[in-house]
Image (cartoon, rainbow, N blue to C red):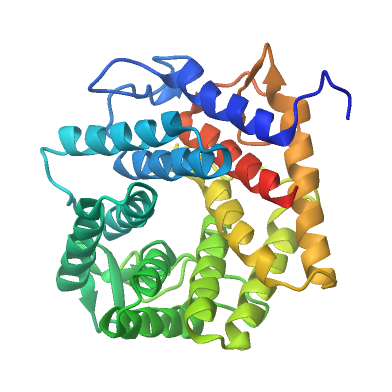
Length: 344
């Protein structure tokens, strides 16, 4: 490779630093919600975006060993608590589970058991407040809407429960995964968003997001790790491939919406695809195809979004973007590039 072209680990560092370059601001805000600052809502507390910032910083620390990134992960956790009145909890079960997943990784990275205790507290709170039998045993999306069930809540519950690994946690992991499979997953592995959002018993088939595909992939991967049952690996692979077939143009996933949250959806897919790939055999054609997609899409991302020594990602990586962007969009780019580094 030309010495003037940064390696992928160097590009990952650039992407991570670009988050602070474009969005960094003083506490308590910590990160501006949009770039340019003031282009969108500048004060909303995006709890679940910040949970993913913790995860992204841990990715950088695992790759580089640089304690600076771990320090930023800790600072992000503190910012969440400060802005949430010192509490771990809010009304959204998926939000809390994302924080639980990030804190469990932070516990492993730092050896500080306080993070694991907080993870367990989140899990217990979520199950006590949100698990019910409406439309089958599963987790609700949020406290004021306990009869609305979706992938964004049940996917992270499976992943976190499987990682906690105790038999009681695993019981919920299996139940939530079975509910997802039988309620929201099609024969081709495509994962729908949710059921009964408008209290009419309907499935939201018009909401087709990479986020849901990634969550099901991650849930299946974690259960495969716990059980060794190859059926979970088969399901994860099928959903990963179907996501590329149905939601990409063959090279990149296009924009999935402009509400802010949608910017993070691609990153969730890349994160859990990255956990699936090493489990597939080196000569598996499905692995080769999925790895090629990661390479092609991150090549496109770098080609269209890198300028002036920084990476500023748009929602559609096929073309440069000057539009205002939320930092959720930048997080997806960071997560994709961190996964690209794992491919070597």
